[in-house]
Length: 144
Image (cartoon, rainbow, N blue to C red; front, side, top):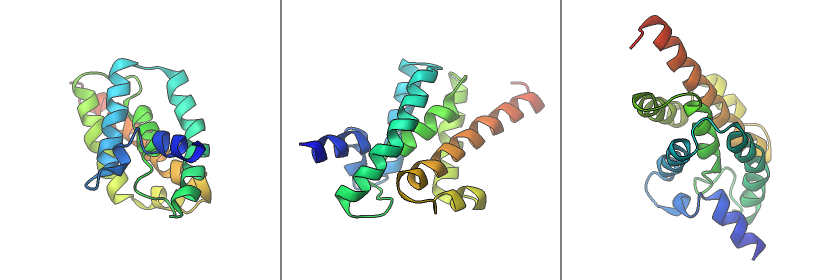
């Protein structure tokens, strides 16, 4: 029972079990949460903190390091990317976050090497922060 609940939440209610692009579906869950609960710092911090524990436990259950079935990291990362944005900017955040999550430029890639749940979550949290900052910078340079 405990293992099933861990996998249920760590996989984003089963979205991580979709064979093609589970991370994209996890990010989509983050987008839905960002639309329903805009700028909810409690949700963002809660999923971020609980996600470290959940992803660590799910990794043990799945017996696979940073399994693609674990998408709670994409959910938390996208909530950071989307924080204080709405409408068109959420679409921009979605696209940029997915690019950073898939290609993992070097500073982000290094965070993935941290142990357990911290390593699973840290790279996506950093990608979310970098996404948010990039959009913030772009809107300062090109106010649209």
